[in-house]
Length: 225
Image 1: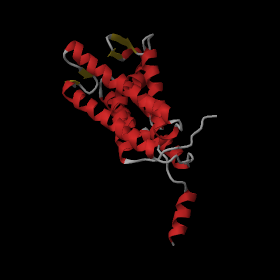
Image 2: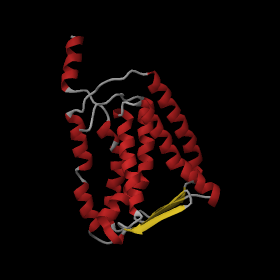
Image 3: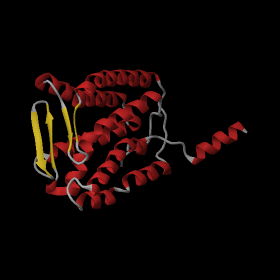
Image 4: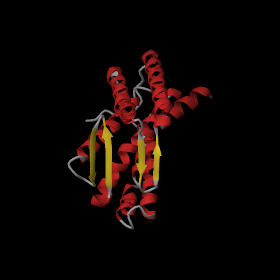
C-alpha cells in the first residue's frame, strides 16, 4: 500500500521549488496528454543530451515521455511525502541535471535552445532565461536542502482536502480529451485544451501538499480559546 503521509510541511522555499518544477513539467505533460488524446495528428519532439526523441502521437519514442512523466510524479510526491531525505535530495539533483543540464548542453553544442509550441504559435529562444533560471534553481535546491536538513520530521496524514484537490485538478481531463481530440488541429478547441493542461502543471503540486485536518483545526481553535 502506498504511504501518503507527509513528512515535511510547506515553506517559502518549497513553494518556490514546486513552482519551478511545475514550470519545467510543462515540457513533459503537454506531449504526454496530447499524444494520448490527439493520437497520430499530434507531432512532438525533444532533444535530450544530443539524442532526438520524436513521433506523431504514441510511438516507440513515447516511452521517453512516459519515463519523464513518472519521474515528475514521484518528484512532486517526494517534496512532502518521501521520508528518506537522501532520496528527496537525490531526486532534486537528478531533476536539475535532467532539465537544466540538458538545456545548457543544448546551448553549449548548438549555440541556442528553442521552444516551439505549434498550437499557441509560440516559437522563442529560451537561452536568455535558461542560464539565470539554472542558477536560481541551484540556489533554491541548496536552500530547500539546508532548510529541510535542520527541520523536524512531521507526520501529516492525507486528508479529504488532498482528495478534493486531486478531483478538481485532474477531473477536467475527460473534457480536455474531448477538446484535444475534436476540432481542427491547432484550432480553438486545441488551444483551450492546451491552456487547461498548462494550468494543471502549476496546480498539481497542491494535490501532494499537506493540509491540516478538521480535527487539527478544532484542536488549535480549542487551545486558543
